[in-house]
Image (tube, rainbow, N blue to C red):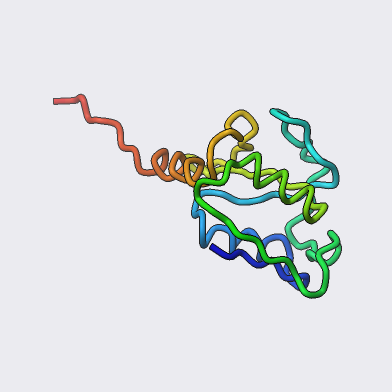
Length: 128
């Protein structure tokens, strides 16, 4: 599926568009690249009102092909190597946004499924 980032968008708008594809995932943008299996420090995270042009997205924007079977780490590396954007995927799970550092080997589809399942899982009622 095609995902387009326009230079006129702010980070929050990009995140909303991403969530139209993967409801329980969102990209966060950082000043520096993170190491494998490591997260980014909060202080390096760009605020959500920052425009994509300020992060170097060209006027014509960016067009990406997203696939459910694309590994999270491959997506993050593609954003870095192809566009110079330092991205970390977060997964919504039970109302909390978690960095996916320890599960970057999972595909975007699997990450999203984990978030959906965590939000829809209802413990059995063991009381009689």
